Length: 329
Image (cartoon, rainbow, N blue to C red; front, top):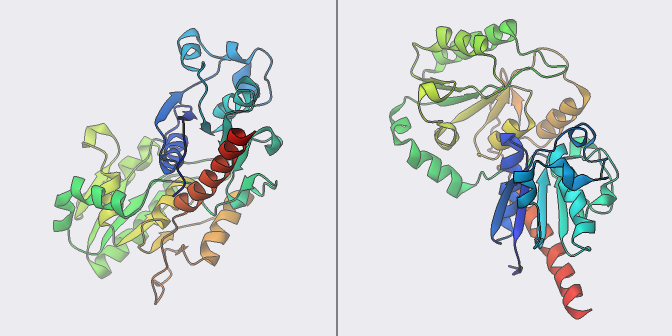
């Protein structure tokens, strides 16, 4: 394994999905990690990452003190707000910091040393790496830790069906009608196959949908988790113990993490998806990672979708080559 020198900054906003991707990739570099949660003020927040003029003033004074020399060896940003700061680091560091941006920055990727954008974004460039899904920390060790954190799940009747609920987004209406149809299918499956249902809401799941699931499924073996009022978040445990995962179609991150587990993954789609999400679903299905909820499981298991290690290996090689060039010049 290539040995790198220096420090890695992981730069994100408060979005949990952005933090998980940036930190998962940063861990692959095996450098000391400093996580900077930076949120620009207007007008930079409106125009990030396009507006660089006076960029340091985009940060409130407390955050400005964090974003200061000495500059890191590598900076990994995820999300549009972070893209402003990873873009700024190239001139600020006089080109010594390898700048990495996860997700399509919506401007020329040449403004960064490396851009990592999922295939369905259809972003092209000589410095663009294109995984099928989103980066995440899910591997065998992570799943084992999840099982250890929730040992009581082992006592639940099998098959243990993990149900991951996202929320409505542009072009995808996760409403009461959708929830009712999904509940009917889950209930029918549980009546035929037995087992348990472990239903997890996300931050984007409307409260009314959560209560709909709680009312309909609360008497069945398993759990309904919708927030801290229901106890500690059992998400790693659910993924670790699941025999089958059912994921709503709206979230690239949730689908990617489910497909990294190694068990069958299903989704329920009741209406045409927006083009970008539809491309992602198509790619997952073509690779055998995703099926419709009503489809039977494949005869042979599909290897889990785990791309973070490979992307990390490519990134380490790029940074090591850069360090070698700097050392010899």
